[in-house]
Image (cartoon, rainbow, N blue to C red; front, side, top):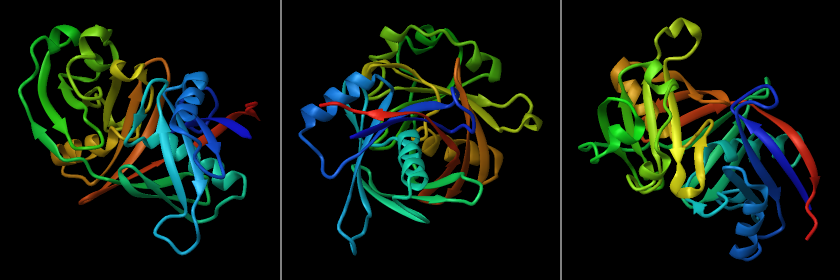
Length: 269
């Protein structure tokens, strides 16, 4: 079977967030799926298979980190939609049935893809003991995110604080169900983005995820409330970076980005 590595939320190779993508006839057992994801050893590997015509979705979709299955993943969904469109397996809007519900991905003429995800609810919470020390930065505010995400969204003082983080990952692994989203307003929106973020998921075997689509379902309502604008652009990443365009639509958030296939080969099993 064919396996592809796709860089998501970028228009050039070796940037953005890489994801493995396998298109299957059906899902094998969970042990096999997890073993493949561990072998690929990227933050996420997506597995998809077509569904019968006439239903509420066109493809079934699951995502695995090297150590666990997750409920929601944006960059691997973008990567899967990119593969479906570039290989001719799909045109127009593709609907996915996933753990977090029905998701859709619509390809534009310029190759960008807009995904429709549930908006995360945000609940202000006290900062966990030791959070500032684990991050190595002053914490401005903390919000818990909704089901299917399970991250803490942590606002820092400014863009420099986010970019310079060198956190204690072992300590961060104990502070949320899934991970930590560190964010701040952009220093200069004229550079093409409105806010910055970095995401750390050591409890899932991912020290830092370069560009996290699911996190932007929480970042979009957070920064839209601050700015009064429903359409924003986020810049995410440390060593690897990418851009996510967000459009808040009430209970749904649209995430737009591009993707590039960088590796394609055969999986021998």
